[in-house]
Length: 202
Image (spheres, rainbow, N blue to C red):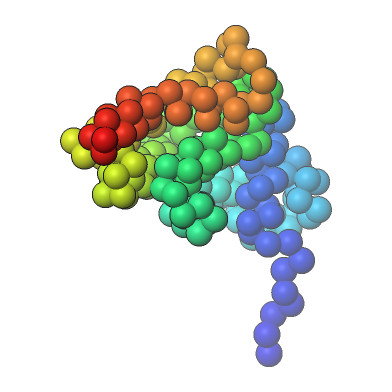
């Protein structure tokens, strides 16, 4: 005899967690707020995750382990590795639409950095992102889209720093949509490597 199927998936709950964080930050993140957004009750969340902390750990785990899937989807949609790279990074923080929502996510990052268990998952997510970026850069080098002398690991680190820094500059005094701002800055970081590849091909 099988159990009753869950009416709301874990993925939908994690999406609700991300939305609540963007809307009110970690201080306003309660089981009740997440449950309301996900269409559940707080007791149902407690039964599934044990506690608010259990929910946060599960969310952090999913964020870290889901990086590969995000990039796999981008590769399937965009055969050009640089298009896949820029599109993925530009749209990754899709829930951040205002400077306030970025501030709320940064407040959650503070929790990630100070809680030993959550920090483990934050580190894993960061390393997974850099590894996926490096893989796409290496592929672009092999295809002649970037200069052959490009170090995939070094450029990946620079692109990741550009990605993180551009979010902050957008929140302080940026214009337009965050996705456009990110894409513009990432393209600027890639441009010298593209130009050198083009010169070598002539």
